Image (tube, rainbow, N blue to C red):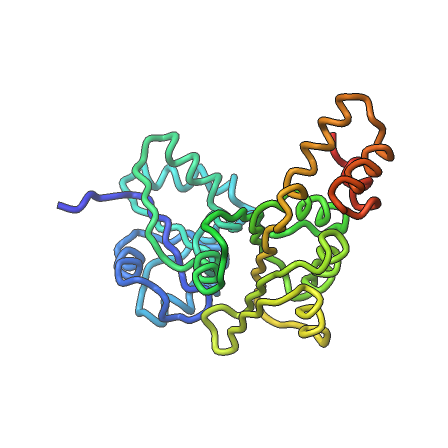
Amino acid sequence: MTRKFQFYVVPTPIGNIQDITLRAVEILKEVDFIACEDTRVTQKLLNHYNIRTKCISYHKYNERERVDFFLSELEAGKSIALVSDAGTPMICDPGGIIVEAVRKQGYAVTSLPGASAITTFLSQIPRGGEEFSFVGFIPRSEAQIASVVQKFAGCNMVFYDSPERILKTLNVIKQTRGDVNIALGRELSKLFEEIVIDKISNIIEHFKDGIKGEIICMVYADNTPELADIESKIRELKTKGFKDKEISVILSSLFGLNKNDVYKMALECK
């Protein structure tokens, strides 16, 4: 006999409406109601699969106020499916607050396998190994972007960004890390899906007239192992009393790095 859950985390298609599992359709039909980011978006999916389950809005602006309602419904024996507009809930989407509350109250929670932009993207680009760091939506400010890409210079770093900001982001990465290799995907699973893998300067040129669609990007790990460990070397020199300018001169001379880049890292490294 299949275990009966009360709370389901259900992935939905990231673009192609057919990218949903049979089990997901079944669960969405069986539960008492569906908690979703935007009822209008989810309703299109439900109509396509003739799903008549009631939808209730659940998004980042009303997460906390919805918790008591969900818990009372679960206590009454109702079952709930949590979905996001696209992809898997809680991967850069709401859901963390309610899942934590539901688990604390001892209710059974399960997550269905399904669509995710991260795995869809990574499964079609070459990588030197399995390790990667996912940072979610990359920060907006130039200083924060630079800090993140420096922090993860030693591994493949994956992030989301908007089409309005991506070119600015790529230019900051280029200024911070040089002409690194990146992979950029847009419109995954849709008609105009595009994956580009090249030097960052070439990709900036490729999209110079603008870019459309949801964006996911991976910055390849730096091939220089010393660069990946540069922050630890900065900290070590600081503990020995060296000043930021002295550190920039030492490390740039030893490892052939840009002195100004090392100095900026030293200023930010606590």
